Length: 165
Image 1 (cartoon, one colour):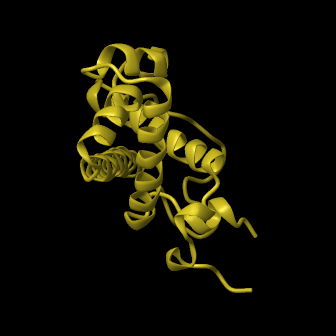
Image 2 (cartoon, one colour):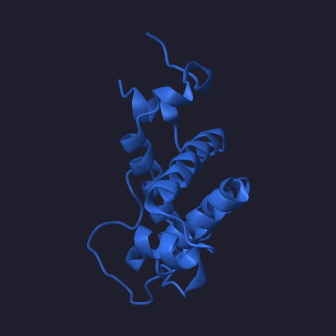
Image 3 (cartoon, helix red, strand yellow):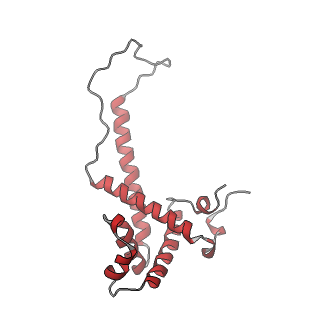
């Protein structure tokens, strides 16, 4: 069979556990990338110590390497990739309805997200506080909308998550 497209999926067909796992994985990666972008990260640097070898300097193809250029390219490309990923996830979350966006930002996108529990969010962050069942409904809707938007922005592929071949 060929690859399935987004149009082949209905919301009720998406497994809630796989959806939650996939979205939480993207949001974890988002937090790591945002941290790396905000901090002074250690970039690759060129070696300033000469290295000696009995081998000729050029490879059998007579191509010499430019260590400084390859390091600079890596540093720029890695930062650009992270920034693009963070921007696309921000765009997807900002497209959510107000309550869903609030939940995702407070529970999954804050610096302390690893230490914040669902109970803390629905008891102390929501004003007025909501109960566990209402929180669960809001989160499920947010995850469904978010996974569809993340698929649209090519951050993840629904077809690969739900129908690995």
